[in-house]
Length: 432
Image 1 (tube, rainbow, N blue to C red):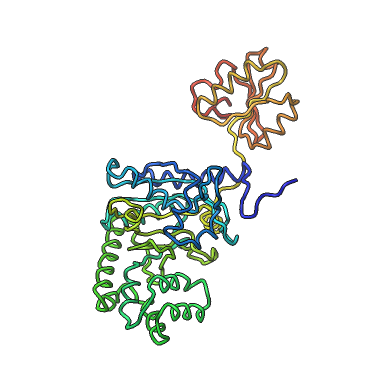
Image 2 (image 1 turned 90 degrees about the vertical axis):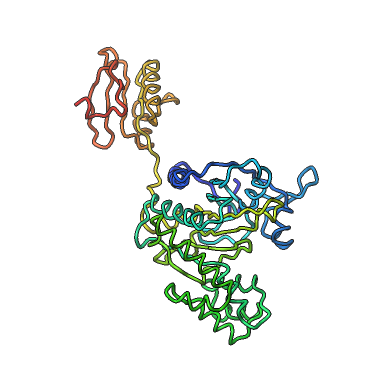
């Protein structure tokens, strides 16, 4: 008997039915906006991650030397891969490029609520537009996706900020600040105790008086942003861009779902503009559900022409936690439209009925194990068949089959030549 590897999960049919519903819903939302599906490899050169994040990132990767002596890694995220793909065909691709992809990723990290070592997420990205409308469309897709999953008022909030507001505020202090480390500290603001958070800002180069002053600035509300704009041209430009994105989001119909939160930082270094994170509005799901933002420098960093980009990546594990908390995650149960039950030597007719029903798009099972009548009926109940079509020798002698509705237990005989006929969804009621 073997156990599964820690941080990796099995999904049985009942679970996969609910997961498939979520994946299909998310992808359908993106496709309505014109995002096109792509497929990407599970392995990439390890250097693609170490060049971007340093050798220490190897500790978080599933990396190894393949049989050809190449250092490769299971992909921990999609953004470097899609950047590589854009660079490879940059002159051929029509701009803006709008891609969507759902697939697994792998990171060797601590397993915790909503976080596994193998995890699934859907990436939604736009390349080739620096307009605020592109940021707003990404936010609109995120909101519509959540609403299409059944989430509504009071279920989630999307907190929006701008990386250049943070970097500009840090640079406005008379100190030698490591902006990268300070922004990482801000990203941990709600994840560690306050003293540890303030110490991280101090270690990044702010003195203790400036640490408190900077943290106070993060509480600035939307109505008071002009006061921040006076601190530097960087901050003023970022606020102008942030407001333009929020104005565009209003036209996209999602402004009321967005909350200004200057303490929203996103820990990844490649973000360059507007950033955002989705949270459970009740706080029951204690960590970020997903996040995203603008990363205008990444394509150039991979050797391509300067190309603005913006996107987000909902993780399926945390989305499931949010949907379960809100009571919109579907019941994890099998679903079958028809079970065609055979009694005696009736396979040709049973097979014809099953084929006709499947051609109409229904989920249909029939006996392939030589079961008895009772065993077949029990199996039909186990797979939650709505209707059982009983094809028996005595029925066929009368040119009939019997329909049995499993919920009510009622049944009716119908002419075999009329079933299923041209009805898309023939039911018991059609023949009563």
